[in-house]
Amino acid sequence: MAIYELYSKRLARDANNVSEIYNYGSLSKKIKMQIIYIMMDVFGGMIEGCFNEISRRLCREYGELKLSYNINNEYGGSSIARYLGSLSAITRELDLVELSFNYMIEMHENGYNNIGNPFLAISDLNERFKENMVGYRFESSRIIRIDSEYAYTEMVKPTISLLNKPYFQGANQEFLSAHEHYVYGRYKECIVDANKAFESTMKAVCDKRGWKRKGGEVAAELVKLIMKNHLLPEYLHSQMGTLANLLISGLPEVRNKTSAHGQGSDPVNVKEHFARFALHQTATNILFIAEADMLLEESMEQEEV
Image 1: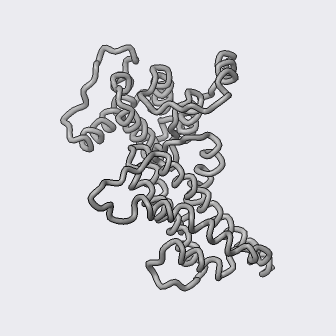
Image 2: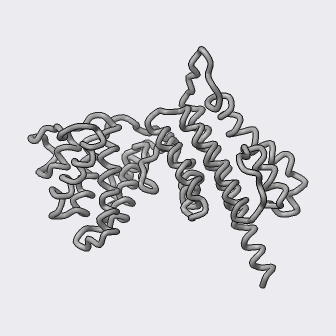
Image 3: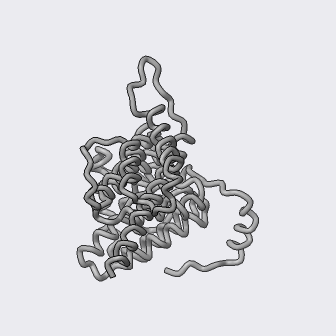
């Protein structure tokens, strides 16, 4: 499943590298066909049977008896290709992609040796998204939305990788849930879950280290607790006050002002850029806390040696 670096692709990329303008609307015919080829590579001769199971699961979730689509469209002979080709709503397109690629993983884990490698397929999918300036990626079994390749590469993806550790399971679920809310435009819920992920990360570090806490702490209390227990090296302690204020005044303050309390008689309309800030701030904060925890562990191991 190699991806070839064609001259036309290089030329188009060079012409468009001035800015990152991602598409969040319906998928183009080109990317749909590329996704279909990936599915064909993985499912092979089992593609019709696989789509029967995928469609059954989609119908159950949508509350429908069957999926309706044009059987004579130009997207190829397989049912999954014709169905994807007939879709025009990005949410349903992404539903199909997410469920199909998760089904690949499920089959692989259940010992189906006659299918292609689902993890190579996921890598191909993300490369095709990037190549076509589609503002989504498949990470940790979910479609997430991205707004900047730099933010995704430097903050979001490393954070998801760090949170895959067992003791960060709660934080991981909340961080991915925040991204799911963001994809579907539920910006209040996005900010709430982003803040929960930040708090859960600090709670996980405290519990792992045996640092006593009373339970139910909010972000400000947790920041003070990890500072008190010297999560950071001694030479940074003089900057503790500034650092604590930075961690406390960013994400938790946005959450408090937009999503945490009753909105009263006037509904609070949370704008997209607030949710985007919350996600990026969460990723930055979690990376900082988790990497500091890793460095502390390494220094303790060296002292024991």
